[in-house]
Image (cartoon, rainbow, N blue to C red; front, side):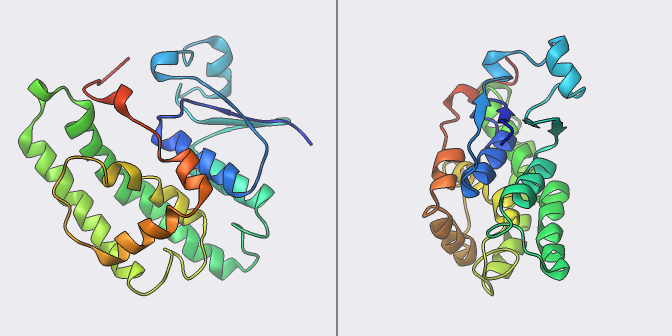
Amino acid sequence: MSKVVLWGRASSANVQKAVWALEETGTTFIRTDVAGRFGGTDTPEFIAMNPNRLVPVLTHGDLTMWESHAIVRYVAAQFGTDTLWPNEPAERAIIDQWTDWTATTFQPAWLRLFWTLVRTPEAQRDAAAIDAALEASVRAMRIMDAQLQKTAYLAGDDFSYADIVAGASLYRWFTMEIERPSMSGVEAWHERLKQRPGFIKGVCVSYDELVGRLAF
């Protein structure tokens, strides 16, 4: 089998999605530290892999790809046909619905909150910006909570890659110093995800190196 290499630092939320997907499928892979305190994204070799100079990047044989959700989908299709990748197009459509919604609506909100509250040095924090980001995050969380009141996972009663891309937020969501309204659906989902070794290994990673740090 061709070697699978994942490029990116462990504390990157987008890299964490790819790690989790690879772990879920039992794929043997090598993770190479790049970006953040490790640097390396401005080298000609890395730019040739990803002209955006961002992580993650996945290489598998002759394939080189970037964009975390695309990587998660590829891993699910290539290695998770019995677990993450349903054969029925209608089932995949609902998974993709939540995956794309995460990219367009949920992730921009919660990452903005993380940046304005955690990554911004305390003296530079903007209370209004934090409040706005928290409000947007809670609004998106309530949409997920409404679904999770009905089903065990976002796309139904089976775990899917939609849970990976959205659930990668939860370690930070439940450890940030914020006022979190009670959402029983999200909380139960979080408890289920904590039973998955891939979530613990890929997502429950200290972000201490990011606190108060806007750039490296």
